Amino acid sequence: MHRRIIAPGALAAASLLLAIPASAASYSPGAPGIGDPYYPYYGNGGYDVSHYDLRLRYQPRTDELQGTATILARTTQDLSRFDLDFLLNVSEVRVNGAKAGFTHSQQHELVVTPKTPLAKGTPITVVVRYSGVPSAKSAYGFTTWHRTPDGAVAADEPEAAWWWFPSNDHPSDKATYDVSVAVPDGTQALSNGTLQSTDSRLGWTRYSWRQTKPQATYLATLAVGRFDITTGTSEGGVPVVNAYSRDLGDNDGAARASVERTGEIVDWLSGYFGPYPFASAGGYVPNTTTGYALETQTRVYYSPKQFAKGANASVVVHELAHQWYGDDVSVKDWKDIWLNEGFATYAQWLWSEHEGEGTAQELADYVYASHPADDPFWKVKPGDPGADNQFDDAVYDRGAAALQALRNTVGDKAFFRILKGWPKAHAYGNASVADFERYAEHVSGKPLAGLFDTWLFQPSKPAASAARAASPARAGAAVARPRSWQKIEAAHGGHGH
Ligand code: ARG
Ligand code: ZN
Image (cartoon, rainbow, N blue to C red; front, side, top):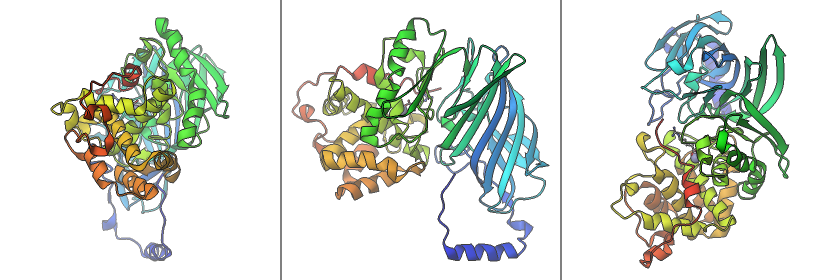
């Protein structure tokens, strides 16, 4: 869902072009990637999706997923064929009602050839019928489909959709969603947004969820299992739906004591980031074993591992902060990941201060002092970490320290205006690190190129004088580890798949 402003002149030129039959030579295949420098085959060229309608059925016993995806899109070039990112077996593809040719190529590309070529700017409806056992599929040697004793979960980053629906899998093409999944009675199906209906017949119950705000593909989630679902409304009026696997065992209390604070934390974060951008909030804790949580839009995925040492509201703060920084405003390319992780970590620092477990400055001092200059930590550039280091500690911790340096440079007033103004400036859209730099300079009225270069783009430890980032460390004093540290770090939870 891209917003484009079309100049009147361009419109006139376009209608002129439409009047002349385009030569067949102008029709070309859509690119197999959308142009992300880190992941050349992620997303696709030639079209832009506005809506996904997924009507599915899942059998936990056999891990069989089947159904139909109806994709509404618009072509952005004269298209002879186009790709979708998808791994499961496809039995039929229709484009605008007519059967289309299709084949799997590369590692995760479904190549679709419509019966007749598609002119640029045409609305298209693509229907894909499919079935498969997602856990049996791998691409590049990994899977992100997590089976559990009672079901399965799709939640990963930077990719997860290939295992459960065909898509233009890149955050720069956001869309709205209707996800309707039938599961055996006694089992629940969770997804993003608001539960529209449940319908039981012949031993199956269908759960229909709706996401009415633009959502990146990696933020779409599906969870099937035996869940206890709780509902409520935050004091500020945000509806909350949480779910807990019935098999969390010893982690059950700690999981609930953390995730049940969702409403309180959403309201608290609104004070820093502005109004909550979506119609629903919440999280779910299935009985998976991943080390990470994920900011799946409106319905955060948590791993029980994060609550193995006790309640951790800090992880909830991290994932809910992403609802503004990551979900409402999404990266343009994956190299912009600092806009997600640096800010979600900084929200944890603010929470630590709120809880009296260490101030943001103390946390910045600790990050600075605990990594000596020769630590490889400083080699990672948070502003362009590389695909292999997308979720490195440096993106989170040095990334948050960069924000503390910004705060010290522009002062609290301008800093908190920037934090609150940014989600509004790019609501439901995409933005880059360079866009943020320009925005911070605009709001603060200060030149900040040197500061951002030092903290985000140099493969070395910033000098202690760099924006007063580390006061005690500068004096050579020992820096105590803030009490919140372990809980904050639990949000990173493993960097690989
Ligand atoms: N965005 C997630 C978080 O910070 C991290 C996901 C890491 N992904 C992974 N496959 N390890 O909460
Ligand atoms: Zn994060």
